[in-house]
Image 1 (cartoon, rainbow, N blue to C red):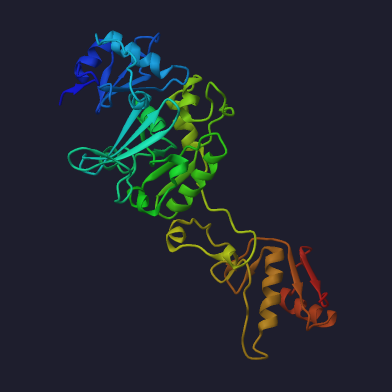
Image 2 (cartoon, one colour):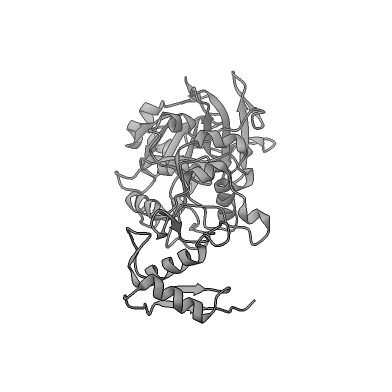
Length: 385
């Protein structure tokens, strides 16, 4: 397909652009050095489309998008842009600095998001023959869906707050995605199925909406994803004129992909905060129960009495009190009980609230015979209500 600018001039193909810019093709766009950058740099993204025939986006916050467009025109032998007289509608379209195409599972166009120099975002849906204003009236899909579906299901997927950051991470070899609208678009349940059983890493922007947005995603994916972690980026300061709030800014200040991988691996598993009080504190899903890890059961008497509450029940005068005292003595002394069960020595409190000291001494003598009486057993015949 051939692209032309608003004047009808032909725009070079992606292959020619990659060659003239000293970059490389990645999917349906070119990654190349930005103006004034080294030859190994890949911070400039160029795709075909829009009124100028091409769109640019720089992953470096300090690069001006208008300068980047002029740079591409110059390197690719295109005529420089000149303002046109008219009602101003052309200038509105000229403000588009980046374009992101959402594709369905089959790779077909689905949603187009255009970003302007004023950070406005326009959405258009694919009709089958062209783009029409407005988001699709169909289920929402995550950005870069074909790459997500084609990836190894055990490979971690990073969810960020915008298409720019998803593309930046993808350029470094990460599996990355986002949802249209970022924190303003909200995360809806129809997106969840694409992350079932996946290893998910959430990267919040360092601004007020960022953590709240990520928290909502985590609530949706808890019990759906196999693993869910929120990754903090150390050294990412507050938002300033020159940037500083998202993972692209974090990479721009000198951090590398290997550091991000290490931070993601070390981040703790996310779990929903427990409600402060009430019955909701004890509510959980079957899916979360399946994933929960429990420690091995600890026993007072191996295989018989676990730690916690055990009730000895039976008819009167069958030996319940004798058995309880025998276990208490054995536990306090680290000796055998019930014939062949050796207990680990520990401190024991025996509250014999239906006995007296005379009976306790008699029964202890019967049980221990000539053995020493343990210091680690504390007894009482009264207890506060």
